[in-house]
Image (cartoon, rainbow, N blue to C red; front, side, top):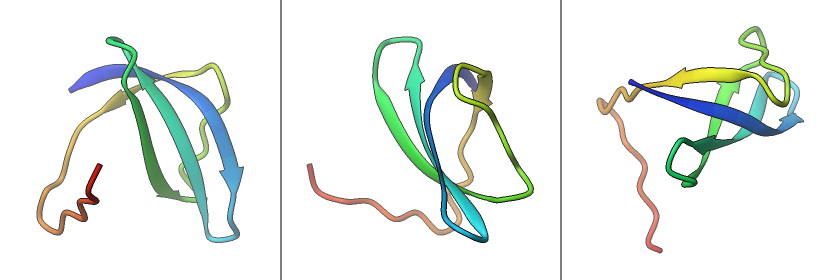
Length: 58
């Protein structure tokens, strides 16, 4: 797990669309159920669950 900072949060009904900035400057986007609510500027830990990955070309 690594730490990241929430830089953007967009409410999408049943979920939030987050943009996170990792410690090395990499930007990561993710969807989380709306009951997992984080505020912009908050430090969060990021891990992976790769049972059903969705990967897009660069």
